[in-house]
Structures are given as C-alpha cells and as structure tokens.
Image (cartoon, rainbow, N blue to C red; front, side, top):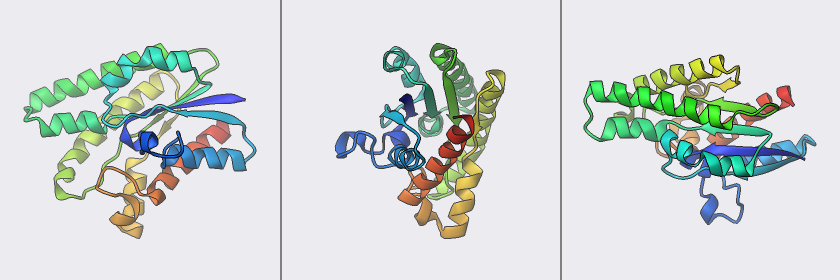
Length: 204
C-alpha cells in the first residue's frame, strides 16, 4: 500500500478536526474515494491546518518526514497573500514577503524530496468576490509563477487551479464553486480532487 500525504492550509484541512473523517470534508476525502473506486490502494493522511502559511509548513517539515509518503501534495499560499494584503504592508514589503515565500517553499521542497517520492504542487487561487479579493489576483499570479519555477527546477508536477476554478465559477456561478471567495464548495473540491486524480493516475 502506497502512502499519500496532503499538506496545506484550511482548504486541505477542510474541517478534519471537527469531522467524523480524519480526511476532512474536502478534496482529500473525495480523492480517497476516487482512488478506491479506481482500485488504487493508498493510505492517505491529511495534514492540512487552518491558517497555515508556507513558513508554518517549513517549521513542521520534520513531522511530515516522520509520517513519510510515497506521494506528497502541497497546496499553500493564500494565507501568505492575506498577510501581504491585510497588514498594511508597502509594495516593497509585499515584494520582500513574496521573495521570502519562494525561499521558504524551496527550503520545504528540499527537505521533503527523497528518491522515489513524488511531490505534486498545486496553484493557490482566489475568486473576485467579495470585491476586495480582486486586488489579490495579481499577487496570486505572481506567486503561481514562483511556484511554477520551482516545479520546473525540481521536475515536479504543477497543477494550475486559479483559471480553471474561476472558469467554472463563471459557468455555474460563484456560489456554486466557492463559499466565500477563498474556500471551496463540494463542487469546487470535486474539481480539485479530479485534477489530482489525473496526475496520480498518470504517474502511478
């Protein structure tokens, strides 16, 4: 049985501490169901934590290494952008915070990488609702480019999510995909789980 470890913030956590399922009620649980239906035998551990930034993931890297994982997925970044945007930082300070994000993300990858282990990176995303989040989109795009560079540098799969999820929100309506502009509905989590399933199936 292969081990799959999911790292991230509240989008990954998805109420796992308050749910009957330790996998939470989001994409991690849905992915588990998809893998079972496909006859793919994985032990899945959800280590998402509400409020986490990439620095907090890095601080806990030793704990993740003790859990292990043949596949590790990482979805992180929107709380980092929240700190940039909601704490009165100047543009120069925001640029410095973005640079620090990239350094911490790379440090996390170098700690987690191991021969035979696959790490799948996922793009942070935001929706233009409420209206204040429209100002976050440029930062999400910049952050995405930074993560994409790391994915290329270390030859890791990178799942683009921002444009895809926003396209689905335009198709079905924002409230069909997102609860509040950041977190996902069940339909939104289904999209994310399917994206992951495709990558795991291709590489499994």
